[in-house]
Length: 493
Picture 1 (cartoon, rainbow, N blue to C red):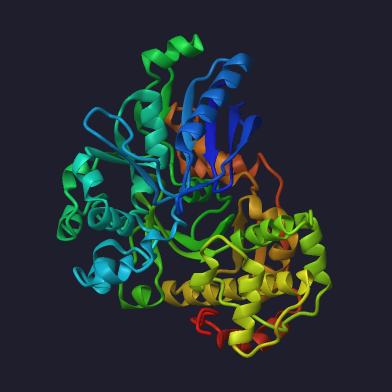
Picture 2 (picture 1 turned 30 degrees about the horizontal axis):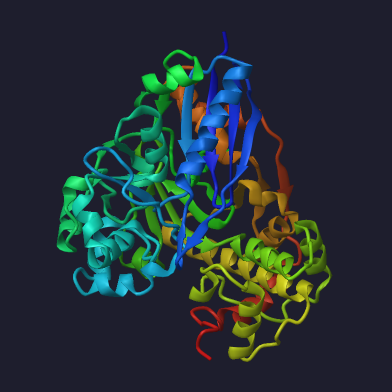
């Protein structure tokens, strides 16, 4: 009988429960439950509504069990964020959203204790204020009472797995987003934390993708009227799950497209040297202890947050509307640096785009279409920059880019990516993260042999779209103009 597994995939704005089944040739998926993931701001702090999200996990399990018997459960989420548990296993506070402003200035403060160079040399992690290390340092400095009560820290997928099983463990790929995991040994770099005042006793046991956190608790089995179900540690960082599903063999480039754009390649070993530090590429974990060598780039957040703003102002605009208006606008009139600090925080992105262009002496976009065109082409130019850097540092001549995830439904971005980079773009699967989650569960259950076999099965299970470069010379012509605005900020008014 075919195995059936339940995959939970949490994004920054929504989550879903997907039932996966493998018939020996293809993986088939059915959406069982979908729900919103709405950050909540209380007294100026942005939180994740973690208990509400766990309620949705339970609803997903209930709905799945109404359909069929479940052989395993796997959970993936975004990286860096966490919950703190006391010695009784109780949640000490509501997990804070990485976009909260509490970590502004924390990288600079930590660098006075351990230099950015030393930290990168030890962990190979891109310096970003959202990283777990900076969140913990904030708590150490400003919420010491919490840290004294903390017995264990659990990243978001580990926290949900704990709520299901009562077992406190941390999966390797999600731990690699923390900025305090040794990328070579795949062990906690405890000395780094202790240097900044964080006691290493709060770190849970590490486990690898495919290992089992534990079994569904007796309490929940009674509540659901079901037998014991293993909760498997998939590649619990969503990008790691997506890369597991990449329909490629050796030497491939991927862009995992969602709220963030994760641009990188898969390596057998970490790549940490002066050049990788200079371009701030990060070394995160993948299945079978591979390295995801990548750059975190501000992604569709810019479009999502712009749409939210326009809706708030009374314009019920759709993503299709925005894509159509962007396509109709004149190209290459202005650019932004998508990774400028003002674009990382929730708020009025369209106004910030206009201010960026004004401060940097460019044409200031006036219409929605012009603002969208500016965002789209700036993001595609950022891909062009990183494609060039990745070729240079790896010494590999990548001819194709694999675009993965929900962002590939945005065909304008796919076309612009092919044209800006001059590379063929293979877009798919859309459900790469869920596919990777399901594949790791099936490997753990012995249904699929390994990642290469999983990738071949996934390749045969979904449809793909291919985009060839168009007017690449035109993109080359304006690349120098775009480059003038890298490292700039609209906050410099």
